[in-house]
Each structure stands twice: as structure tokens, then as C-alpha cells.
Image: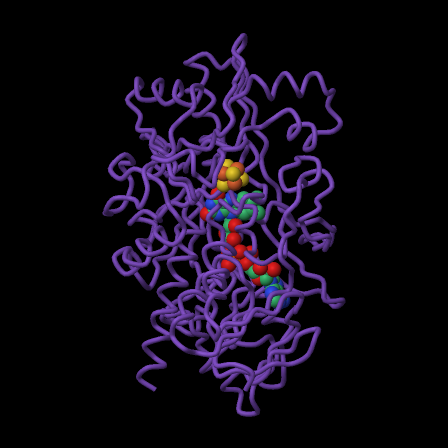
Length: 503
Ligand SMILES: Cc1cc2nc3c(=O)[nH]c(=O)nc-3n(C[C@H](O)[C@H](O)[C@H](O)COP(=O)(O)OP(=O)(O)OC[C@H]3O[C@@H](n4cnc5c(N)ncnc54)[C@H](O)[C@@H]3O)c2cc1C
Ligand code: SF4
């Protein structure tokens, strides 16, 4: 045995469970396919990040028609949290239950909010979470946040006041950023405009490298091997255990294997590990591995006000859930989704994203816009799935549900913004390449014929394989996924500790 526990992947799920197990005395080996993300000026340069894609994978995946696309994802220590906007919301209590949408229903989780609540508390503490309890009417029961909310800059505060004037309930967006608001002099975070989608050059963002991997590596029983891509998991002859973890640098073995390679890559790895005992893929007796891929329906929005330059630097501070549970329209009694402000779209960022548009026009628009991110819940569908082509390329089939609800959310937001002076409100919908919020490909549940993992995220088919990344989710909700991945990894970590103690 090379370790007691091998963790595959060092992102939100893997990085967190590594820290959760670090003080157990167990011998832990983390295998990460990427390297540390280099700390350099390019971290904050829109051209480097969004035009040259220096930190995104150059891998190509295929869509359902066989067309290649470049997924916006990266392989580094810390996983995709290196780029995340650090918006960390808990799921609503209703997100754990069946919810009726225009295009169908979500699936109830095998656990409820109360089961996850203590782990949400711990997740928020570990990831420096700032917010204000009691301001979002859809929030589940909770105590105070570890840190006070980020303040709004002037143009965001104006929107906040205008929304309140209309009887709506905007609230400070919970953020996982290491900022000491009462002591800005010594704050590691400088509230820069290059946070959402960018790595943090100051390591001030609460990402999985800073809040998971680094604290875990302070323990001598935890090791990290970077540039070790896991290619296959090989099961024992009786098909009951994972015996060997095969990487491109050699093979490793452990008593327990925790897979946390991200929803798409974890499913792809299990499918690539097909064998005589598991002809359709490891842990796939249910034929559920890779199915029910979900991703948010997301649109970025730029709202322009004539004659008013938006001088906001750190814009991602406001959110709205007034249309989360239903649209407010009796003729369309369905949820629409969640709205949050976006990191400021700067002239440099807009040009990097839209190089074909004339520079003066993009520069003017970016300096006059307030920018938003709109999210609608996708639904589980077994035909939306990850598969592997014969050449090993990942194929992603995705036809999102609830398109009408998303259009209605965008329309509602446009009408509201127009009422307080934004004359031009433009949306850009994200396509299949925007895989940031990928979930659902190894869902957990009680019934082994309908789920890949049991309620503690152990594979139904194997004694020693756990999966703790975004793939465990049977429904996606309309809030950002990371805090739930982190809280669930803490829950599974605590279960593993109990199991090992009693063994
Ligand atoms: C631009 C952007 C903005 C985002 N903003 C937000 C936000 O504001 N709030 C939020 O909640 N979420 C946000 N997200 C989503 C969030 O980052 C993900 O939900 C989260 O990181 C997923 O966690 P995970 O553990 O499932 O996977 P990841 O964090 O992606 O970690 C997977 C890890 O596994 C490694 N790996 C993959 N394959 C292998 C292999 N074969 N062998 C070894 N290692 C492997 C990867 O390199 C990676 O380190 C954002 C994402 C992006 C890209
Ligand atoms: S806003 Fe703060 S946490 Fe975000 S990238 Fe800038 S310095 Fe880092």
C-alpha cells in the first residue's frame, strides 16, 4: 500500500476532504493531474486569461453532434476554484426536495438541509465566508456568517436602493475571500477588478488550494503528487474493491480511494476503467455513470446607463432571489432562478472576449455598464451525459431544460433595470463550453439501480471507492455549487473517519 487514502483531484471536493482527513493520522496521498498555477502578472491580465486561455485546458471535447469544443476548465492544484468568482451560497431548504419546474421536476436528495447545515458552517469558516444572515428571504435557517459582508461600491449601491424601492429583497452576495473588512490596511485582498474568472495573484481568494490543500500539507502524513494524471482504476479480482490507481507516472494503491476529479472527468475516468467485472465502466452496474449531467443555464448581462460612467472596481457584491421559488406571475407558477452581480466587465476583458467588435465601442460599453450573472436550474435527464468516444475523447451531450424560465428571468431583469434608467440591457447565454457549474454524473441515492453512490457517497458497487466532487448531486439548484461540494466533502470526510475508527 502506498497510502491509507488516495484522493484523486485537489479541487473543491478533493482539496477539502484532504484537509478534513489530514489530522486523522491516516497516510494520505493526493494525485493531481495539474501543477500549481503559476503566480505571475498574467493571472490578472484579461488577454492572458480569456483570449490566450493560458490557464484553461487545451483539451478538446466533442458535443452530441461530434463537433469539437474547448471546455472552459483548468487542471491545477485547487481545481476550478482557482478561477471561481467565490460566490458561496447554501442551497435553499427546498433545493433538497422535489421542485416543480416548467420542464419537469427535480429529484429529492437522500439527505436534507439539516444534515448538511453543520458542514455548511464549517465550510464557511474554512473558506473565509463573508455575508449577512437574515437579508435573503429564501435563505435556509442559519447563524451569522464568519465575516461581515463585502460593502457595495456606489453604482451597485444605487441598484440595491432602487430594487428595495420596488419592494424586492437584494442581499449582499456571500463571498469566500480573505478580507478583513475591519482592518483594510492589512487585508490580503485588495478588491481588484480581476477576481471573477481569474486566479488571485495574492492568494486572497478562498480557493481549494489556499483553504484545502495548503493546510492539509502542513501535516507530515499528507503528500501531494502533481502532474500525476489518473488514467484508470483497476478493481480486485472479486470486483469488490479498487486495487490499483493507474497514473501516467506509475501505479499506486491504498485502502480507500476518493475520486474528486470534477463531474465530467470523474465520470470519464470510471467509464475508462471498464473491465471484465464492470464491462460498462467501474461502479456502473446501474448504468448511471455519466448520466444526468447538469449545468446551469447562465447568461451574462451588461446593463448600460447613458451619461453615467460606472467606476466600480469590485462589483460582485449583490444578489437577488425574489424569483427563485416562483416567477411571481400566476400564469407561470414556476421558479425562474437567481441573479447576482458579475465581476466588473472592464474594457480589457470585453475586448478579450469580443475581439471582433470595434475597440472604442467595447471600451465605452464596458465603462458604462453594470454587469450581472443570471442562473436558472437545469433538470436531470439521463440522455444528458458524459460518454467516451472510441479514441478516448470525452463526449458531452447536453440539451438544457427550462430554457423558457431562463428567458423569462432575463426578460424580467431587463424590465426591472429599464425602470431605473438602464436603457440598453444585453444578455449573452453560455453554451456547452461553459462547463464551470458541471454536476450530476454520479448521483447519490438510496437505490443502487438509480444511483451510483450511496447517501455517504460511497459507490454502491465497491467497498472502498468514494466520490466527493460535484458529480454526487441529483439536482443542481440555481445557486452556485461550490459551497455545497465543500460541505458535502466535509460530511463524507467525517463519515470516513467514523468508519475507520470503528473498523
Ligand atoms: C470561471 C469560473 C467561475 C466560477 N465561479 C463560481 C462561483 O462564483 N461560485 C461557485 O460556487 N462556483 C463557481 N465555479 C464552479 C466551481 O469552481 C466548481 O463547481 C468547483 O470547483 C467544482 O469542484 P470539484 O471538486 O467538483 O472539481 P474541480 O474543482 O474542478 O477539481 C477537480 C480536480 O481534479 C483534477 N483532475 C481532473 N482529472 C484528473 C485525473 N484524471 N487525475 C488526477 N486529477 C484530475 C483537476 O485538475 C482538478 O484539480 C466557477 C467555475 C469557473 C470555471
Ligand atoms: S478581489 Fe481580492 S481575492 Fe479577488 S483576485 Fe482580487 S485580491 Fe484576490
